[in-house]
Image 1: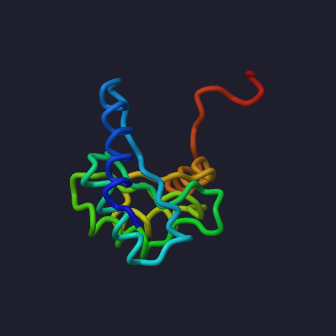
Image 2: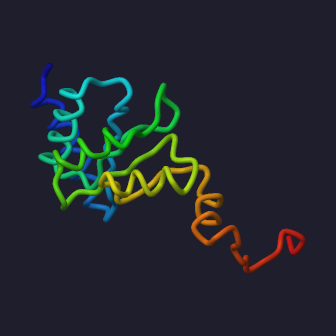
Length: 131
């Protein structure tokens, strides 16, 4: 467990990305880690200057949990974003993740979530028939 090398690796990516005015999200794939490993990964990401930590790719064995989001938020503090990704499929899920500390959501159900938040109605600028 060479944490110094991990931090240096993340830091090199952060440096290169920031030089090009890009943000860096470190995906920790929380479903595969113990809580201790999640804390370490989040802490190293913060120390290396990452802009976000992200719960998962959305393609792993499990998506975001409110517990993981809250743990990551506690570790990185208020100045780094926390992105909850995977398993955010409705408005209640989105609200739960935000309450746990997420500042961004990765959700393939984004349209459904917005419709739920708008009471089931969302006016579109162009109708599907207009394409």
